[in-house]
Image (cartoon, rainbow, N blue to C red; front, side):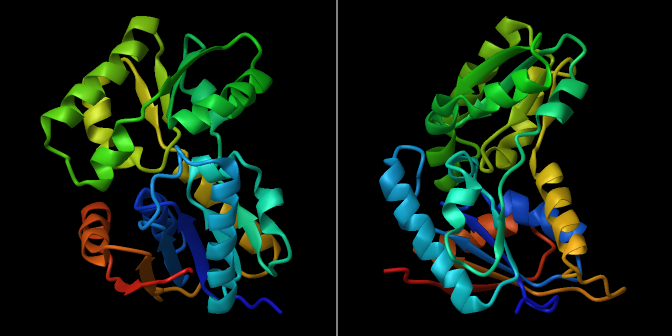
Length: 268
């Protein structure tokens, strides 16, 4: 039986989902959170679907042992596999990343929009399909950004290689004349300021974590599982499958004012 005092699980292939955790903490301050990043096996974007599904099942079993009431799949690569197909017999529901199609189109005067994502996510065509389903006249500029995740995971925030990658990918958006861009990989908000600066004020940059958080909050409210105690700050436990010290640094980089505990988890 699920209870409102149970924690919320947040799952990702690495550290990218910390950007979603940050938004969830702001939106749901009284909730307890357990974050799990599979840093031992990241990145998932270059893995086979069979491998990815096996990894996710291991992480969901971990969350079942932790007694969570909901799991937020804070990874676009995992979300496009189909949240319903990942749930299996676990007692909690799953919320995947919003594709943000309507918000993206609302931010675009030209109806010409860009999507930054991993090669796997771009290859599925899921975001393009969602945008065109919302507006068949929209022009979509999908850009696979394979260099971003390894550089972010490697904490290369000031490296020339990251500067070059940002220019390479944003140049595609500028040349296409898009006026809105969605960051459809949860790692990318780590460098949102650099992407925004490279694109300039004529392009609106969106983070789908805001809509994802709203969906999670709405679900909890409907199921009477929402904690709304005024003045209560929930706990945040951050777990990684490898290199906790690096994960801790990246957690504080994304959420410098959030108190967290950290743990190493063995999923095998």
